[in-house]
Length: 116
Image (cartoon, rainbow, N blue to C red; front, side, top):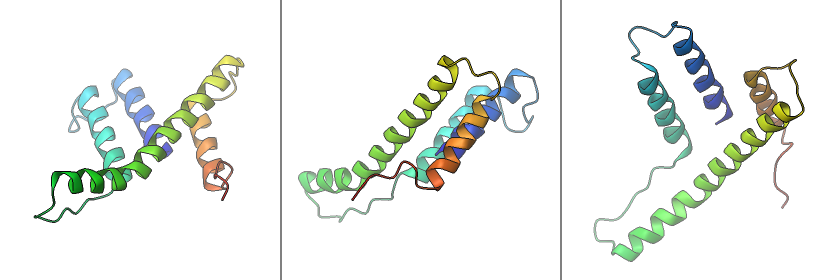
């Protein structure tokens, strides 16, 4: 997820500087593509039996999406907090992308893993 946020930042910067890919469309379309990539990466596929009741469908969807949505909200909260801390502390030695890349390394190392 953090990688996709970094890519979104790159796309935004390219659009602002006029360097966007001429085949890739404009800013909003590029951003929508990033959002689609994020959703495709983060959300599970859900199989629902053809004869499932509405209650069963709701339970299957909630069971499948619950953990993914928790992960997404936690990731966005962590990214926002990390960027806000860097901003509020007046750090000018790092860019937003560098903050996100450092955060990605910390996540990869298990720094923010929840306990048992």
